[in-house]
Image (cartoon, rainbow, N blue to C red; front, side, top):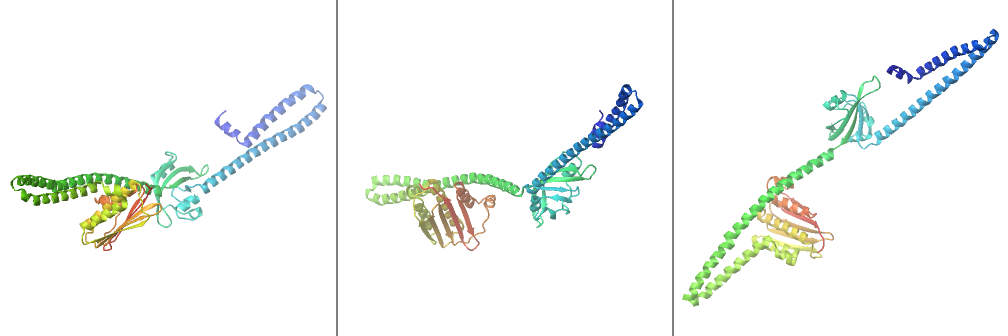
Amino acid sequence: MTDLAKRLMHLPAARISLIYFVIAGSWVFLSDQVLSALVQDHATFIKLASIKGVLFVVLMSALLYLERLSADRASQHASDAMRQAEGKYRTIFETAPIGIFRATPDGQYLDASPSFARMLGYTSGQELVGTLDTSPPTVHVQGALQGQNGLTSYERLYQRKDGQLVNARVSVVARGDGQDGPMIIEGFVEDITERTALDHKVSEQQEALHEYAHQLLRSQEDERRRLSRELHDDPLQDLVALSQRVELTRGALERQPDSVRGRLEELQHMARDLITKLRRISNDLRPSVLEDLGIVAAVQYIGDELAHQMPSCTVQCDVNGNEHRLDPDVELTTFRILQQAAYNVRMHASDSTHVRFTLSFDEDFLSAYIQDDGPGFTVADSQELLRHGHLGIAGMQERALLIGGAVNVASLPGAGTTVHLRIPYHDK
C-alpha cells in the first residue's frame, strides 16, 4: 500500500467510499449470478430482485451508520484528549515557578505566564501580551527559527517594568503555528539574578581569602623579622652587657671586694629589666595570664599595657554579667582580637585621651567593646582592606568568623572608633 493510500484510509469519507464500493460491487455481481442460477421464473426473479434491493439499502445504511458512529467516537476521544492536554498545559503554564512565554520571531509576546509577568514586574501575563521585547532577536533565537539545535539555552538580561535588570536563563524552541501558519517562539525563563549575585560574591570571597592567605604569610614573615630584631636589639644586647658586667665584677671582687656591692645591685637591676622584657615578649606570643586567670584578667592586662604605652591616655576596663571561664578557643580569640584592637589604637589613634574596654557575659554569647576618642576613619569592607594590605581589621573579622562570631567596626573621621566583638560561647 502506497503512502497516499495509507493517508486516505485515515479519512472517514475515504473509508466510507471504499466500503460502499466493495460491498455494492460484490452484492450486485454475486446476487445476480446466484438468482439467475436458482430462479427460472421471470416474475419470481423480479420479486426476489426487489427484496434484494431493499436488503441492500438496509445493510448499507446500517454499515454507514456504524462507520459514522465509529468516526464520531474517535473524534470525541481525540477532542477529549486534546482538552485534557490543553488543561494540563494551562495548569503547568499558570502554576510553573519558571516563566513561560510564546512570541513572534520579532519579539512580540503572544502569551505570558504569571511567573514570567511577575519576573518582569507586571501583575498578569495579559499586560505583556502584544508588547514587544526590547532586545532584538539573538543568534540563539535565529538559530532556533532555522531549525538548528532544537531547544536552545542561553543567558540574557531582561529589563523590568521599573527599569531594573534581571539576569535570566532562557530556553527557546521554534514551532509552526498550525500546518501552514507562521513560526512562533516558545520559551522558558528562569530568574538567576540571585544565583549570579551569589556566585559573584563567592568568587569575591574566594579571591579575598586567597589574598588574605597571601597577606597572612607575608605578615607572619614580618612578625618573625620583628621578633628577631626585638630579641637582638634589646634582650640579647642586655645579655651581652650583663655578661660583660659580670666579668668585670668578678675581676673587681678579687682586687676591690668593698666596691662590689654597688655593682651587684646594678647587675640585679639589669637582670630584672631583662626578665621583664622577655616576659612581655612571651606574653605577646602566648599569654599566660589568659590560661591561668581567664579572659577578664587578660583584658585588664591589655588595658594596663596600653596605659603604660600611652601615659597621657585614660584606659578604663568594665565587666558586665556573671563572670566565668569560657571555652579556650573563645577566650583566645577574644584576647587576640582585643589585643589587635589595642595595637590599632596605639598605632593609629595615639592622640586618644580615653579608651574604654567593656566585657559583657550575656546568656548565650560574649560581647566585647573597645572604644576610643581618636581621629576615626572611613570604614571599608574586609575585601577592600585586604586589597590595600590592611590586615588588622580584616584579621579580627576572620578570627571571629572561624568560631561563629562577628566583628563590627564603627568609625567616622573625627568621631573616634568602636570595635564590637560578639562570639557565641560554650562554658568551660
